[in-house]
Image 1 (cartoon, rainbow over the protein chains, first blue to last red):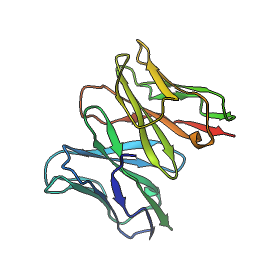
Image 2: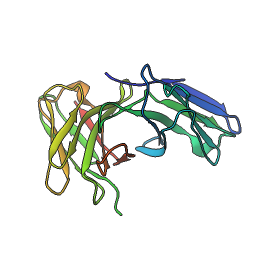
Image 3: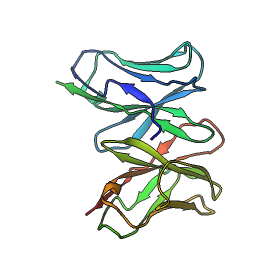
Length: 110
Length: 113
């Protein structure tokens, strides 16, 4: 099916280490969204990026949109156990339709 | 505001049966999207409804259908269930006016035996 590639698929880090997930598209994106899904939970919206080269921060989370608007990244500084979950990027496909990335599952070891 | 409500939370069916899942969006939201989530395939888009009309459809067989009512509540139906239909079915609501964030419900976990 239609999906957006995310890497890595899994990441285990020690608490306090940094974490980065990357989202790549073969086509130019008008915008990109990021969601977090806790184990047993549902996806929760984190942020939307629209502009080329845009960088947004939310406390320890830094989101970037590539200059060519074909890739994006989410970086977490000094991970905590509360960061555990799966992080998805999502891109619009046509109008009013969103395609989700394959997700990166983060496990934080205390 | 109350969040997106999905019922039932869990469902067990056998092959060949049909199932109907319900989703009540956030008050004022007119768009409801449905997604299927499985460990192997991730989040797959099923369809999106706005003002009782299906605006978008994913690549799923015709056994998967949906509808939306005048109060924006939506249902999805899966007929002739197959083992591979076992999944978490998530609905998401949004105002439906453009590029917006989606608000997801807790999902319905469907198991087909």
